Amino acid sequence: MVQLYFSADDFGLTDGVARGIVSSIRDGVVATTSAMVCVPDAATHLQRWSAALPGRIGGHLQLTGGRPCLPPARVPSLVDASGAFLPSRAAVTAATPAPEEVYAEWNAQLARLAEYGIAVTHLDSHHHVHRLPGIFDVYCAIARERSLPVRTHDRRMTQALRRRNIRCADQCLTGFYGAKATADELHRAVRAATLRSGPDAVLEVMCHPGEVDDALPTLSKYTDGRAQELALLCAPDFRAELKCWGVELLDTPHG
Image 1 (cartoon, helix red, strand yellow):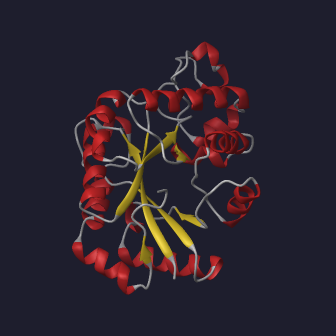
Image 2 (cartoon, rainbow, N blue to C red; image 1 turned 120 degrees about the horizontal axis):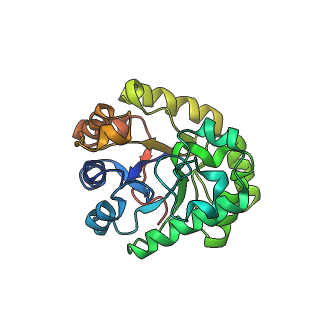
């Protein structure tokens, strides 16, 4: 039987996003989330809400959006002239970040989460920067050093991770977003993934639930879609529909 779990990105982005993610886990089908520390007021949001999710918070490693934990002078290949992270994965690719700077910064981000009392259970990254050449090796190194499971992307990445003895799902379904964050679209994606990975596959579904607050439009273009995801993920009939697909919904995939 296919096993499936939902993992919510961007915990700590805003108070409303954090509150919505807590609801999606407490009242809905979401199993885990991952926290970001390099956005404004992340400390306030994480310290307010993280106690509600013991054993369910990973590190959402950033190289885009916000400002680094380390002084910009220590990570010059990761920042623009103002000392902020670059705006997109494409910009990060073009900048050719130094792996040693990525390693130092990501460890600083994980140290910051520890300062907030968060015992990280897994790793993923903002805007999928872990998929970039060079950065992937850093991602793997940190995961192995900390014995943490990680988010994969496709079968090729899964094979690369497992060669390094790093735990991950068989695939991560990243299309549950915007207009495609519907039950029908997800069902199609699950069927396709099952054909690729087999009837006993473990699938992660990336999602972005959240409540829209005043701060969100200043930090993200994805606003109303978060509220729509939250409504679906907390809908009682959605949980029932997942069971009808013949999949097992995992509650603690990293436990």
